Amino acid sequence: MSRPAEAVAAAGPVYAWRNGYLLLAFTALTWGINFPILKMGLSYSPPLLYTTLRMILGTVTMFVIARCLGILRVPHRADIPVVFSVGLLQNMGFITLVTIGMQFMPAGRAAILAYTSPIWVVPAAALFLGERFTLARALGTGLGLAGLMAIFNPLTIDWEAPGTLTGGGLIVLATLVWTAGLIHVRRHCWRGDVLSLIPWQLLSSVFLLVPLSLLMEDVSSIRWEPGFLVNIFFSGAVASGVCVAAQVAAIRSLPAVTMSLSSAAVPAVGLIAAAVILGEQPGHTDIVGFCLIGMGILVVGLADRRSARIGAAHGAE
Image (cartoon, rainbow, N blue to C red; front, side):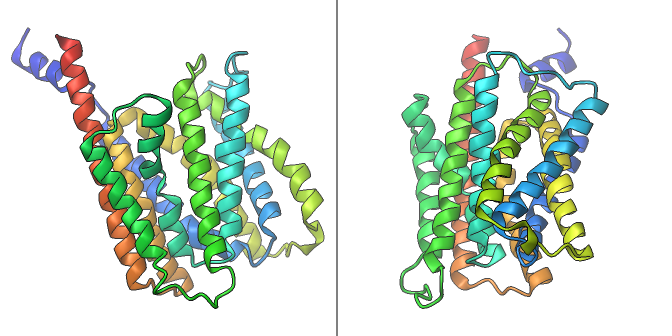
């Protein structure tokens, strides 16, 4: 084997770095900006109806993308129950809870809390998947929890503000729901291509959201103004459609550790976007919480990278 070939073999998979990082930057910017966009959208529509319209647009967009790529397939029979449950947990549950919680708190703080999922995955994977709860992963989890405690510091919280704990509690609950969906996905042996299954996951959430939102909220309360149409198109077609496809492509182009560490980029963009678009001023506790959570995600990502390298080395033996 030649030296270059040996180097490639030792390095593992060859990743399309340029395309991967461009896609990653696109998703981080779009999802970060979507937090203040979502906050603005709630001035036009009740939360459940907003989420329903968003998921409808995202579903249509993903079906079009899958069709154009020639990968639109009916899910395998073994995948259908998990496709439905993931649509219920991650597409409907997570997004609905975040949207409702957003009514009670600043968009920037919501962005920080919504991206704490990598912290919760560590103990959940140890408990339900038997993954090792190493010292590094424990440290990362501890830093993430310290970040949450900084944000919910009882000495700095404005207890008189309505919904102070309600909003934060709903978004933290959303991340736990997302984590449950992720553990569910990891335990399943998929028969179909991931990108071809996403339109069906979104569609399953629409089937649940439409009757729920029509039952609980009044459609006539939506203000169908040009600003709302632009808002819901961005949040639905772009953030919930195009971005999802871009993320799947990025996952295929970059190492898993890079994807996990990128989780810290979205709340950073969310904080900045909320300050620029909405004029929000993040407090000291928000900044400290974000830094601690970001460091926790970094430590967890590096620990996963080390575990992957050790596993690859043992496999090579």
